Length: 408
Image 1 (cartoon, rainbow, N blue to C red):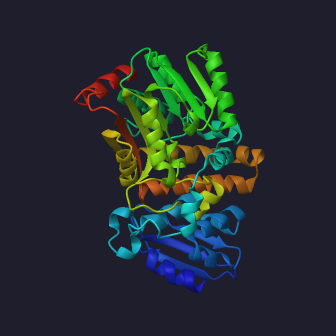
Image 2 (cartoon, one colour):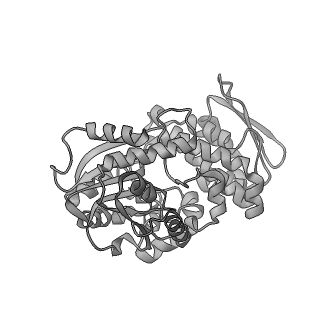
Image 3 (tube, rainbow, N blue to C red):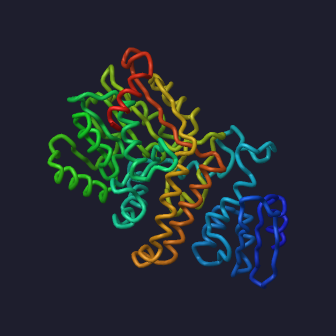
């Protein structure tokens, strides 16, 4: 516990953390802070503290999954929030807490893990998205929107916020009946079906998840629009044809930095001259860095969160014009809070479906992601690209007008 004790005495200054080691010795960190309840944990194994210090995300994540880190006061979110809140992105002044601009610093193997060739991309997608559909039903909204929602009001329901997200994106695409739309990373089909229903466009949705493909096709058949909203199991690199619009929601995080230029160049080649693309992705407001080891091992193998500069560099290399950028600063935090609480409410169901270790893994994933958007460097970007500067109206008024109509 010596290294852990030294580290946490420096790390926790506001808020109270009590740690009981495997021998029953109690350690106290921090001090009372208004509005923050004390947090207490217990280690059941002597090596746990050392593993957390040596590799914080992997050490803490595996310890919680394995039952070697037990919450005795507060839940896992309370612990992660306390730790990250004491080192909030906005408060960092010590250069030792800031990542270097060098692409090669940090975990050297992390960059290799994001090299997503076609075969690896399909395997990575299957790891996460081919889990039981029932699992996603337990914590997502009824349309299974597995990406950042859009809260026009902080108190809106998750269902309303996800509906408003679709309207927000549709408005930026400047749609009209008869246009051909490509939905890259279509999920379970909700966005594609919405765009057709609301605007009359024809949509091709593509995915690498066989489970998502099956459900998306079933939904299109049930809605009687399978001739207008089609879904295919295909890598974005293999798509052919021309499209008036491209929408990509929650897929860019799986591309990997080595393929950013390939991805955006491919999208440009698929767009007609006056086409429009809307890219919705998790982004990083700090300097570029690899995804933490625990997340790539257990949740999103091959996953990588881009900075806005990386996105811009890729677009510039492909001669794509960045027409509009919006940073959704807290919307994903609000989304994840809904997902986490719904997951916790269905603990028994998830443990029965998988086991207790899987449940703790899923809970740790959502809790960690939530703190990333509240305390660390995570945001959500919506970036609009065009090939020709005359492709869209010269003011953003059309977006507000279309969104009001769609929401109305």
